Amino acid sequence: MKLLKGIILTILGLIAILYITDTDYLLKALRTIYAKGYTTAFLEDYKEFDNAEILNGTPQPWPIHKDYNSVSETERLKKYNDAYGTIAYVIIKNDSVWFENYYDGFDEDSKTNSFSMAKSYVSGLMGKAIEEGYIKSLDQPVSDFFPEFSEGLAAKMTVGDLSSMASGTNWDEKYYSPLSITTRAYFDDDLEKVILGLKVVDEPGQVYKYASGDTQLLAMIIEKATGKKLYDYLTESFWKPLGSENPTLWQVDSEDHDLVKAYCCIASNAKDFARFGKLYKDHGKWNGKQLLDSAFVAKSITPRFTESPQYGYGFWMQKRNGKSFFMMRGHLGQYVIVEPEDNIIIVRLGHQKSPGAASQIFSDDISIYIEEAYKMLNDALQTQP
Image (cartoon, rainbow, N blue to C red):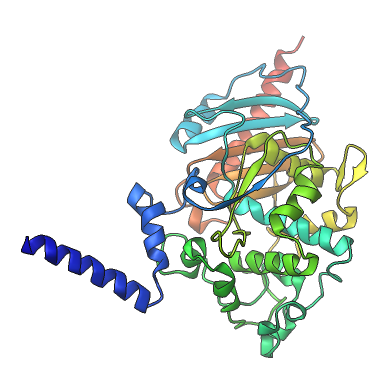
């Protein structure tokens, strides 16, 4: 009895310490992630959080290519799909589904967390807000929307700086540290309070530094500028017009505050994620209608800084083997990879990236998914009569 009483008192003491030190978000982290055996966010963690639903309109299924699933995965691709826990691998050629396969009990309609692929959607929504006159331009100061950033270096920070990861804030992008601001933002019930506590410590607009907090602040600006919840703005701007086949979910910090985790956490499926890649491949046009300004699209998939050629405005870029790819990317190896000249979109969703990914600009698994997709396409050409 004394032992039980001691354990209870110890637990209560620890909880009290968490509240006193303003780290009580760790209780939510323990309940939703750590107690389930994970050390970071996982594919179906959206089920553990509050979500806003994004409804789809009239579905526009992808056309099926005449050579649909005419070849199997290469042996190398099979090996790494198994090793890295791939749950969806899709190749879209000439805007038709050329190959698709799903693994580990998932299927074409399964929802899984997109993680940072959501950043590309937020950047697109910024472009839409500029086009519709809610935001003046990429050069509009953040302080116009949030006076908390109106002094010192912060006064120089612009909307475009947030989209291109050049805010100069003290955000610390650490996924596995329970005490990092990244972890706090993922579990805190009041995300706006966390973001407004950021400090600008370097000159904004000068260098690229990846920071999820930039996207979150950008989302808050879009909501304030448009007067619309970001999930509603996504619904009307892209999810319905792009003919998504399934409704989706976007995690929010809590029911009370109802702020989307904008830097991550749209839960959807491979072929609906691919639609945003196609929109940018086609210069902002969908079925003959201009959904997003073509000049903004071109700027988004062009590096802002010559010394950081890997990033534009919400999108990643990579040149390899004479080809130019742009892509949406997520924490555990969520990818929508686009090669416009070849008219190819490769989508991979899964449980993890390749080892050493944290120290690489482009992890090794990206090369595998690209190289093996092209090998499969070439194999199909060689077997045609």
